[in-house]
Image (cartoon, rainbow, N blue to C red; front, side, top):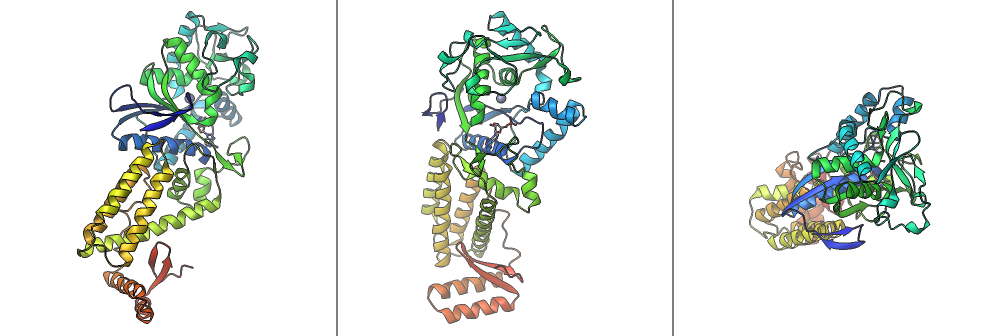
Length: 471
Ligand code: AMP
Ligand code: ZN
């Protein structure tokens, strides 16, 4: 497999540390609110990565942290008048409900930051012993970026412009004010009853140390792949590298992968711009999570994706087109008839599907292979040439595609609700249309209608519906 490594800005062959194994750390949600679908774009990209690695024969061990203590969780829980753990519990539960709906495969471990404070304190102690950390006036502990020669290498910051000794206490800041950042933050009144005792002062960890300490615990000092949204490159991942490599004296991560943003009208979807949709918002509008998954998965992860309601509607049409296609295939499969076994078109489709996802998760290439197979299969169906073994092979190919996309559900599409008699009339009508025997085709349509079924000729082939008019 090949991945584009943000650290080197190059596409590189994936060589894991342990043969056939891939160890993965994916920055998880800050549970201060419902995740929006911009966040889910990042988690779906990571789901695709995980599934692609497995598809290509790697055993995956994935860690996704839950940030249940940071500036935002404290602020929001206080505003809601709730204890921090009660407040974050609600959003942790919501997160797991949402990822299940979006068919995001579960990681092996979901460590919570509040359950790993001792590990964070240990790491900060090590940094202090090594002379990379120092105490501020209020007892807070800061990482001295001047002590880490490689600081700024991931985000490519020119460190020549930095003011020596400048400090920043907030979790989020921009490249322009790169500075010594907080490892441990001294308690102040805004923190209320949220604090832990430490060798320095009563307080709480900074956001960045959470991921360094938890990845160290579950994946060791060096592991294969670390991911996140592009906004995590700086400062979060830059700071993780500085902390982990200073504490452990070895390389932290071999491959850094970052996904681009989901946009709304050209701007990043975010809570602060109030231009976001949650999965719940979209499901309340009547969309299915599978349609949202389709929209989020369909654009390469390193390209910006502009979200529109229209794209969800398009996804719905495409998915229902596929459902109809699977119904036709199942019917042919059941008929046990001789004909083309579709092995050529299936083999070719599976090869380019795999070539696509192995090449830095090139979904466009993989999806093109899927659509091509559907088009070629429909040609065989329309010409009445597809045999039962061919229908089975095509359905098997879609089962394979679903190991990664998990969208088609070819097995759920059953033709049972459409009687064989109607399917046969559909077939006859189709043969007549191809032979340009239009009056015969019309006659078949009338017969189908007299049985209480309606036909819609879609680009994916004719569909029948019971007693419904679907314009
Ligand atoms: P947060 O909960 O804010 O820490 O964000 C969780 C993940 O979602 C991080 O990896 C972010 O980079 C990612 N993220 C946030 N907003 C977007 C967006 N609009 N598009 C894609 N990823 C995003
Ligand atoms: Zn992180």
